[in-house]
Length: 99
View 1 (cartoon, rainbow, N blue to C red):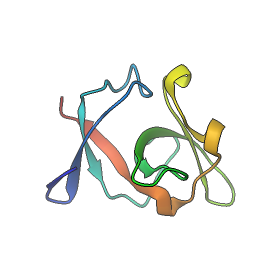
View 2: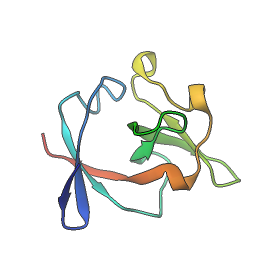
View 3: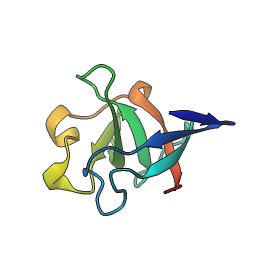
View 4: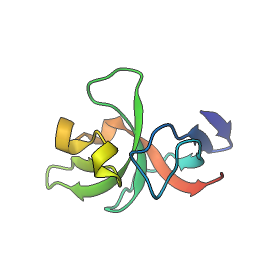
């Protein structure tokens, strides 16, 4: 990740967010706290330390947990595999793609 003021740049690696994001794209992240269904977010993987994932918020449960989904379901490890995640694992919202 690279720091650009309040925003951070992150390099996309993998095909789980095709066609929205391609492997090799660079996205800017904002450390947001008011997430909504449909937002793309960077999160820590709940079971693999030092692994970060970009997913779409598919649902926010009444308990305040997040159901995350990749746009390319065939190539995505997401809440279908690891379940809902807490807000503590959400690192920021994708605000734009640079490349």
